[in-house]
Length: 309
Image (cartoon, rainbow, N blue to C red):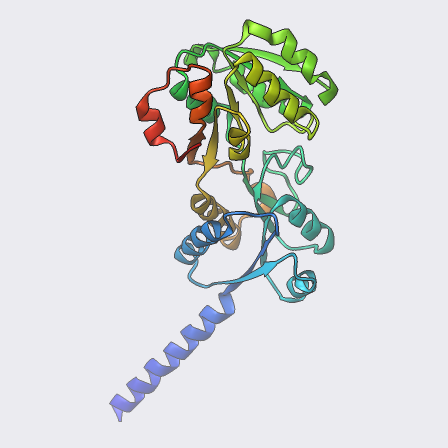
C-alpha cells in the first residue's frame, strides 16, 4: 500500500511540475524580412542559444511576405517579438503594440529611425544592430594596411559619434583621421577632391547622407581612378571595386539576439537594454584591386579572408 502511495505521489509531483513548466513557458515569435539573407545561419544560432538559456521558450517562425503574418502574430499570444530587418521592424512597431520587440539584422538603426539612440532606447524595444564600432573597423584596416596613416572619411550628421570615436583612436593606432562632414550627397564629389592625395585609404561608412544610389558609383569610380584603396561596409562593394569589407558571423548574431531575448524573458525591460553590436568580424578582400593598385599585402592576410574576389 505504501509503495502505491509513493508511486501516486511521484506521479502527482511529476504532473504538477509539468503543468508548472507549461504555465511558465514563454512564446517567442521570430518574424523575418524577405530581404534578410543568411537567415538559416542566424536562426540556427538563435534557437541554439535561446533553448540553452531558456528551455521553456516556445519559438515560432513567420515570414512578413505572408499576408496573414501580422494577424497571426498579433493574435498568437506571444510574450516577445524578435524581428529581422528594418522595414519589418517598422511594420511590427506600427501594427502591434504592448509587446517587447527585439530587432536584429539592421544596419544603422538610428539613421533608419528604428530607434533614437544606441543607448537604452526606452519603451518596448532593443536589439542587435549590424554596426561594428570604430575600433573594430579601424583595427581591421590597420591589420590589412599597416602602413596606412591617413584615413579619409566623409560623413553626415548621423555619423558624428562614429567619427569622434575614430579620432579618439588616432594615437593608439598611429593614424590621422581626415574627415569631411557633408549635409547632402551632392557635396560628396567636392569633399573627395578636397581630400585628394592627402589620404592613404578611404573609409566608406554606411551613412545615408553620403551613400546614395547616385553617389556610390561616383565614389567607387573616383577611388579607382585615383588608386585610393577603400575599406567599405558590404561585400558587394568589394566586388564593385573596394579593397576589403568586414563581414558578419550571422550565427553568432543569432546567439546575441537570443541572449537579449533571454534577458527580457528573465524580467529585464526591453527599453532598458542597450542596442548590441556584432562581437565577431571577418573580412572579404579584392585581389584584383591589390594587383591593380600595386598594394603590398601579405599572403597571410589573403589566407585569413573569408572570401577573396
